Image (cartoon, rainbow, N blue to C red):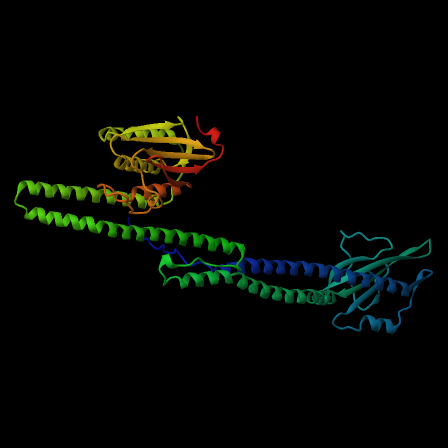
Length: 476
């Protein structure tokens, strides 16, 4: 068994941290929304300011029109100085007015005001509002035309009142300030809360990093699982994945360590025996004695090779298996046919009993290995003249693969130790005490168990058992 050396991945580039990305994706939309909201608020404030000025100009132009009273074919202008002072009291927001009759012919006022364009129709008895340039300044103008005079000589009077847009801009600015200042404050508070929330939300990742960092100085098979009891669900999932990976690494390292310990322990004696027998064979002068020594060397080498094969098989069985549907009954009959020549040579009757077909999710190579070990064990210890039976059958809801023999069997004291590693109940050469341990491992890897039962009056039955659903539909 070898351990692959993992090559560390080299990062392609250091991007933004998760914290900065979250801040960017949360605060940038907030800034965009604030700017868009400010632009919309400015347009709304400008509209309402313009509406307020239009209402003021409409009322003022009507009041001014009432001060000019028609008398016969003439006009009586009742415009006291006090009213004129009120209109002109703000030098920065001066109000200009003009009375003309006929329209466009200056009659009264403090400045000349332009009329509307040709595209702007004059409403009857209603004020017309429009923008105009007066002395290089943008102004809002209200215009009202009134008919007067006798029926035979009708006349028309135009009253205009203009106000600088400075007041509109000032009012708009005040409205924007009153609206955006609280929003800006709320945005700052929200940004602080978002930053604090992100920092607090990422604390489990920081703790996870700290816990992983603390494990760098520990042996991997001694590392305890990561605990994130108060972390969010996503971090729990991450910690669970890391724990699963650590468990797999610990299991792999534990298997490797156990394999090395088993190999070192079990191979030490056979190798020492091989060395001793080889040294004695080199010193032997008698050909017959030399041949006997070499026979012992060959037997020791074969036993060592068998032991190594069993150890490797045991190590392979400890990895995860991929289960696929297979016909275990056909597999069992095939294994029995493969072992028939050896059984005949040993004077043992080997046969198969049970169902013709049985579908079961398993791994064919491992199940074949388990059956090979069971039959090999039975042929080795049952003795000449005995019977060995391989069977596949259903017992209730359990699928049972069984190898039974009528050999000498085992005592009641030995039965609990059958599946222990390197345990042997007999000194018959060729065994190494791993065959039934491998069988038990394979059964567990398939979600089942291995059992051993005594046969009366003598014999032994070894079973691989799995609980299956809808068993009546799985065999013929």
